[in-house]
Amino acid sequence: MNRKRLDTVLAAMTRHCLDSLIVTDPSHIAYLTGYRPDPGERLAVLFLKKDGQASFFTNELFPTPDLGCPVYTHKDTENPLKDIIPAVPEGTVGIDGSWQGRFILPLLDALPGTTRPVLGSLPLQEVRMIKSEDELALMREASRRNDLVIEGTIRSLHEGIREDEVTEILKRLYTDHGLPVPAFAIVSFGAHAADPHHAGGTAVLKKGDSVVIDIGSPWKGYHSDMTRTVFCGEPTDEQKKVYETVLEAHLSAMDTVAPGIPLKEIDRAARSVIENAGYGPYFTHRTGHNIGMDVHEYPDVSAVSDVVAQPGMVFSIEPGIYLPGRFGVRIENLVEVTEDGHRSLNSYTRELQTV
Image (tube, rainbow, N blue to C red; front, side):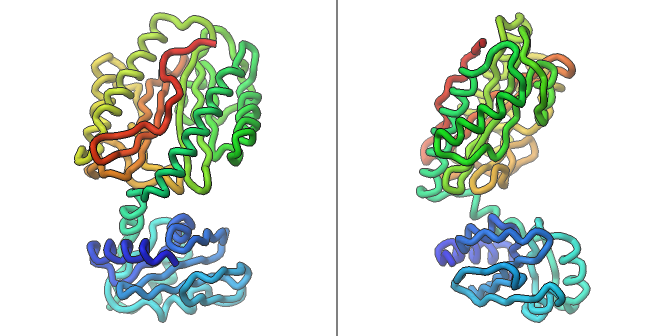
């Protein structure tokens, strides 16, 4: 058990008036214990009390390392909640938002009326959104290697190559640079690039296509994420305008990042550029998201986020314009909030490129 991190979470529990907390998200558990369970449909719970007591509940099928706290196991034929129910004290219990309803509902039925359940994700989300220097070092290295992968991938593009062939090239490049195969890889050509989350396929690259490549892979458990858009052949005037608009929006948002700035203002900095250029309806997603042990972490960089940027936060800046049936453009870097401003974790060029 990482006592320093646990103490920070306990302080967050106090701020949120929680007497106990049921933690089920594997990344949350790994953050506190160094052990990442993979229980599938079975149960794995780290249970915290405000006095600092911690317990772990799991199926006996999964060998559990020494976590520095008591471990309670159950058999497949037993009620998986049998040891948790009596452990939950009176008062307010926070329940992790990722826990399945088939565990939550029976637990709620069994708890006495003196126990009040509430959504309990925020204490760990708030703690994890501020990275330590060690965590930041891992994320910088992940992004450095991701830059190398996207550079090699763009060099490999040529007319006639298929989307799925590019994905295979990506996988080889990640291996070459000492990273796992991509945690995610969006490769989209032409009209497919107008879908922000195109699943990939056998589309063939042809003249006039935009190419959106959105990739990331973890380095020692901490993720990278970046997007670049290039064009096959000389882009049209409209494609150039869209690209230049997205780049201006991206840079405007990046320049806004500093301690004390609400994340919704960063979103507004990007969105206003795109709206003023007449493409507002075609920027269909948030400007970014926090990132760390998971690709998407709390909070969002969106129009409704009241969270304020703080040193140690790392999030994406990824505005885009998507013209249905025609083409799309997205540009994304990760940005680290520093004491006096910000630092981009990516250095690969954002200038318009053709292949």
